[in-house]
View 1: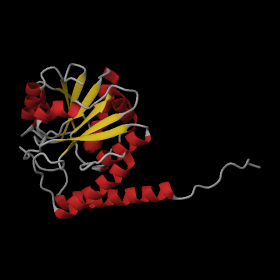
View 2: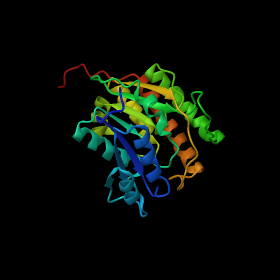
View 3: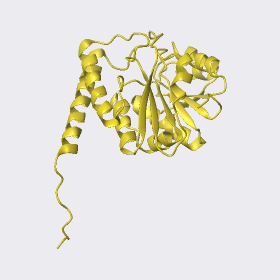
View 4: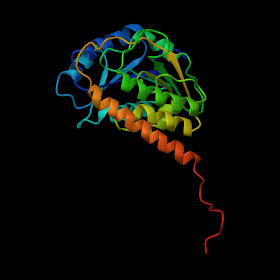
Length: 248
């Protein structure tokens, strides 16, 4: 799929005034035909102003919804406007807009949802993560790989491309919890009969602002998500009650 006017790039941003303008400019420089939407998640700095100045359309949330909630706004916008594909890019400058074409290339315009992940641990560039967090991420990747029958290495990456069917699905169902949005959305796509794959991308150093969660809190949350997925595995393999008998 080509980076054309029917592709929307969504950038969720919370207090990213130090970087969002440059991110928007780099996206439009790498892909001049795409449309860019910044979902300003109730920032208290100049995020919205600088995003507009750089050439993006901006939707500002009245309350801070987190990345998942901001992305749901983006999916609903993309669905309402009829975009053929949507790409998620972080507002902190870590995602390289030069990888947009690489990310979108495998996306197919078909009836089933399709998600392409820009993977940080797929042999292109290096990405440093604390040992405990990396362990939790590997566990999540192992489980999702089993579900998708595709080798996945980075299921928490927020650098993603979606076809129209995935956009329409997530406009209704995208989860709002921090980090759970990236993992649970893949489960939602798979259970809807969709496909998930990945392409290697390089990650850059954050150009401004600070992470929305500390390393300790994000590691704890990844562990919690891993536990939730373990429960999901147990439920999937547990015998279901027989409901074939007629009710009295």
